Length: 177
Image 1 (cartoon, rainbow, N blue to C red):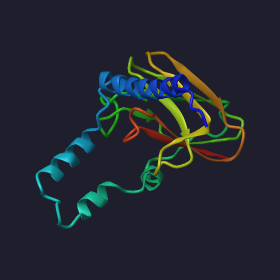
Image 2 (spheres, rainbow, N blue to C red):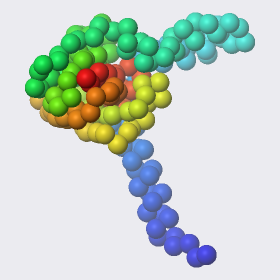
Image 3 (spheres, helix red, strand yellow):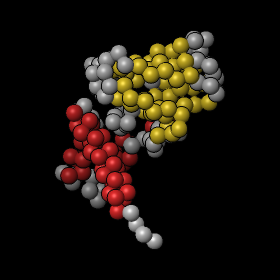
Image 4 (spheres, one colour):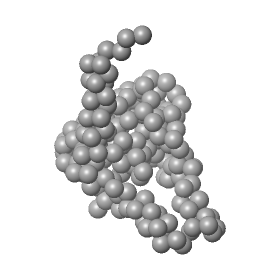
């Protein structure tokens, strides 16, 4: 089998440039999760090394369970539902967030996510908040204040979503009836 070196090099270059772009944008947007940094610091200090990791496990709870404990905002009966991407000054956890982040809607409702600040975000569908990875439903970027993305919920069920650069703390759930 003959390997075409120019194609292999192009693929490798594209893959690496995509990764570099995500890292650069994340750094510029101040995307480091403070909780992750704190966890790393405690591990480096040796507090959890070789000992009881119950504190570490309690902070790594199932994201779906966390979201189910959030207040469910009933927006059934609405034709269009607005969800804002907000900064830490307005959220309880001190990080970027979707507001509201746990919404109940009817099938056929249009959901509009609107960025309220000049921070790069994505609205990315996923099958699970426990293991966030993009699914085929939607994946859009909103990078400036006023940018928005609309999606119509065609089927009943649960639709999870998150922001890729801020996946550690920025996610939401649509309960579709």
